[in-house]
Amino acid sequence: MSREYLKKADEVPASSAQDVRQTVLSILDDIEQGREEAALRYASKFDRYEGPTVVTKDAIAEAASKVSQKLKDDIRFAHDNVRRFAERQLATLGDVEYEIVPGFVAGQKSIPVRAAGAYVPGGRYSHVASAIMTVTTAKVAGCEHITVCSPPRPDAGVNPAILYTADLCGADTILAMGGVQGVAAMAFGLFGTPPADILVGPGNQFVAEAKRALFGRVGIDMFAGPTDSLILADASADADVVAADLVGQAEHGYNSPVWLVTDDRRLAETVMDLVPKMIADLPEPNRDSATKAWETLGEIILCSDREAMAATSDEYAPEHLTVQAGDLDWWLNRLKCYGSLFLGEETTVAYGDKASGTNHVLPTSGAAKYTGGLSVHKYMKIVTWQRATREGSRPVAEATARISRLEGMEGHARTADIRLRKYFPKDNFDLSAAE
Image (cartoon, rainbow, N blue to C red; front, side):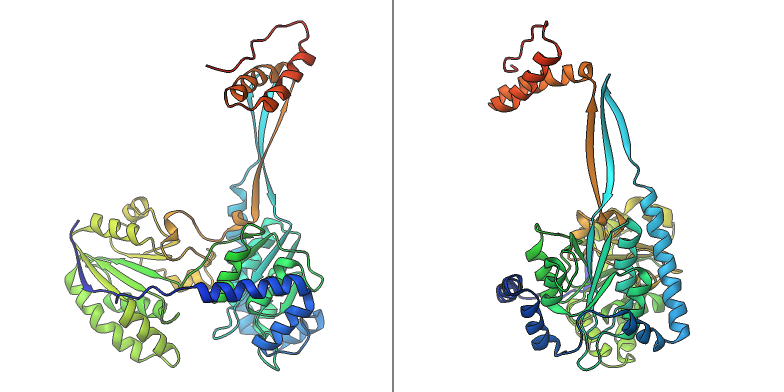
């Protein structure tokens, strides 16, 4: 496969996450033992916030009064889109009932988890959209209780727009608490909340590590690394639009890679010239973040044809994948590894991030090779059941007894034996090990 790097990412030395891991494990253990008192101690240290932890309905109403009507309208628009898309996703999950053999019926049932915990970042950026994405989908799934935690600002509390949004989308409890202590509060069921069955939502490296450390005891949406984006573009693409989209995603942070894959050298060279100029026009601190991301992690890759472009994209398995090229149906059918796909110039990653309806909690760091993003399905347990008549259980019992004995599991075999003897006392069965 022909591939030429016109711009290649710097070699980033592998850094040990051991210090972060040990810090997180220590905090989690301390909070599990010390419960609310320990959580408040860490909140005072890291959040530097001494106000009420559980946000009251009066406080939410007061926060809502501080949000402009125009912003409320935009938040409601985005919430409605995400809700309706989640409802359509939910409709794809149907209960199943199938007669395996005459008289033996097996089935599938979808059951929502009871309690969900959603982390909504509120540090450098107040992620209103994250509240929409995580809480709305949990509500549509049918979770009985949804707890939200978000980092408060010293002497100010949680951002009013986040409080308004979380409440609108269906949060039952909102905790003014961030970081590992917020994740722990949701996981361990502190401050009057039920322990979360699943933890979702983006956060910094400490939040991500806390979710990873708790995985197994609770479910998580995914282990999220820095956000990444890839654009596939051919000669028909508008270089200004391509460059703007790369810059828009680079502003996430210094460690957020952006990639352009194209089969047109002129486009590649034009975009490489435009990106630094567009970054220079950003306000601070966005400019600094985008500059570092582009200079150290940005790549422009020239391929021989669209098949080579698609293969490169699948290899990278980007979180966000944009196609600005002809024959969009070909790309939709060909591409296999991505978190979310944006087809054509008329849509862009920011639409999915904020308001179009698809979820923005997506797999990063190549995880799109094996998983999709957050959806209503993540909050659902797909369970199975079975029911049989005595006659219907007979062939299953015979096969079970023989297979069990072949495996050396005599106790398993006898659970089948006892039923056969009870239901068919006059029959003789050959229940020796299968050969």
